[in-house]
Amino acid sequence: MVRRRKRKSRRRLEGRRILEHVPQFSLDSGEDKSVTAARKYIQEKSIPPPALLLVRRNEHTIDRFFWAEKGLFGAQYVEENHFLFPSLKEPEVETPPKRISAKSATKTATKTLAAAGVS
Image (cartoon, rainbow, N blue to C red; front, side, top):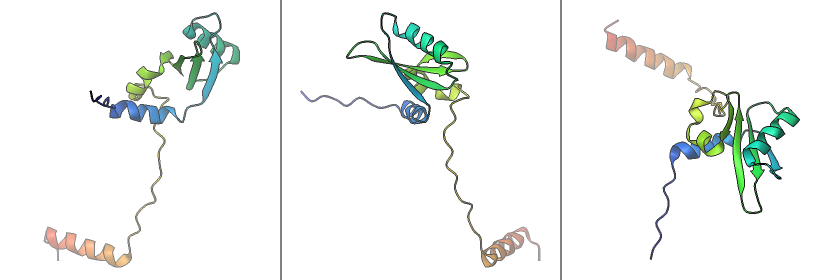
C-alpha cells in the first residue's frame, strides 16, 4: 500500500521560518508538567519575549512553547497564526533600488507626456 504524503500548510511553513529567528531555550521538565516547567524557567531567568522554549518531557518527547508579550502559547498554534503576534515580524530582506539611467527616464517621461496629449 502506498502511503500518501501529508500536505504541508504554506501558512504554517511560513510561521516556522519566522520562528527560526527567535531566541531558543532548552530545558527539562523534571517532575513538573511541561507548561509549568516553561513558566518557572521564564520566571527564574527573566526571559524577555519573544522566545521559543523547548521542554523535554521524556526521552522521546519535546514540547515547544512560544513566549510572547501576551503570554505562553504552543509553538504549533503560533506557526499557524504568526500574523496575530506583533513581535513576530518576518525578517525583511532589503532590495537595492533599481537604477534608472537618464536616457531611459527621459524616454519614459516623453512617452507619458505624449500619451497625455501634452506637446
